[in-house]
Image (tube, rainbow, N blue to C red):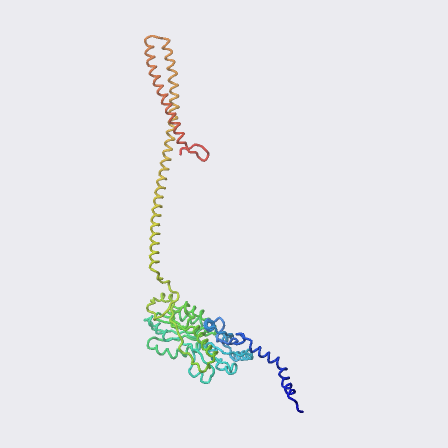
Amino acid sequence: MYRGKGDCRRAWRAPIFRWAPVIICLLLLAACPVSADEQAAPKKILVLHSYHEGHVWTHSINEGIGSYFDNRGVDVDIVVEYMDLARVSEPGYSRKMYELYRIKYADTRFDAVIVADDGAYQFMQARHKDLFPMTPCVFCGVSDYHNGDLDTWHGCTGVVEAYDIRSTLDTALRLHPGTSRLVVINDQSISGISNKHRLAEILPEYRDRVSITLLEDLTMDTLLETVANLPDGTVILMMTYTVDGAGTYYEHEKSMALVSSASSVPIYGVWDFYLGGGIVGGKLAYGTDQGRIAAELTERILNGEEASSIPVVTEVPTHWFFDNHQLMRFGIHSSALPEGSRLINQLPGIIPVNVHVFWAVVTGIAVLAVAVVILAANILRRRRAEEALRRSKEEFRHLSVLQHEALEQIEENMEQMATLNDHIRNPLQAIVGLADLEGGPMAEKIFLQAGEIDAIINRLDQGWLESSAIRDFLQRHYPREKDNNGNRSDV
């Protein structure tokens, strides 16, 4: 049926009006700003370790990875798995770990996988396509790496654990010129097998210089007994020894401590986790470097680079480190160490100071020295004064005794004088009275002699008075001391 122009306009307007609310909502959503979290979610990374949590090398790799991403400000969500291969060697264990991870991460998509050390590297090399087929892989801490490993393993790159056995041995033999024997300690773990491959390439270079003994697959007791009986002129190279011949597991720190305590000859190593535990030193590889470089490669992948296009890093920095305690023990001067060497357990050195500060310190010390001299002189004078006072007290005590004796003597003399005067005056008065009664020329003579005697008695009376005054003065100014009972004493 034909429709007019008005009908046609109404016909195409109707659908527009019905969809208008939807169109408006879409426009509003498009105009709304998207949050940073919605724009870029954290990148999810799986870190698969060969060893267990708490393993010193594993811990340092984790530190390297975490510190790199933190410093770069990269927002990542890191999931860590520990295969514990050093402590578990049960047949079929690898297959069980594969089944576990297949079930555990079936619905998880990772942006990258980092595998650490040889065990996890070999595991992922065989299981990568099955477990994480579309996820790029980065390895680190791998010592048994070969150039053809990645020919058929696409989507993988990494960093090789390039510890430096050759430089460490060269330096050890130079620092101990009388060395005639090299003893290498190694075990049969996955890392120990990798070490043995490296040693097989390097040790033949030294057979013309020293005799070489490889100690492996020994129980700890046998190893310690062997080390304890090593002769002078021996140097030990400590590789990995975490699983002894009986299958007993030892942490790196524990095995190093036992070997070091049994050994009287110098020990060298190539990893940082032995430093401070008994080795003299060496050109050491650090787990933090391995983790840092692996994180750097991972960031490049997260930014869009293909893993297979990134070359494997084979040149990794190693560091000369030595233990000053061991240098002193074996008579090695730090000047003989390689250039750039760093020391632990170093004695405090001389701190450079400003010249003004130096002279201020010197002046202060000089002032203190003068003060000490003055104080010492004052102490000497005080001691001399105390000695003089002590002597004066002794002399005073002696004079006090003499004063007391003199006072007693005076009192005794006064008593005798008083008695004597009475005994003389009384008879003299009787004689004068009789002479007066008799009269005559003899009476005058008697009176004359009696007068002279009386004059003498008067002089004695005057002496008694003077003695009394002296006694009173002594008693008033030099009183006798009292004893504990309140009685007067002589002192």
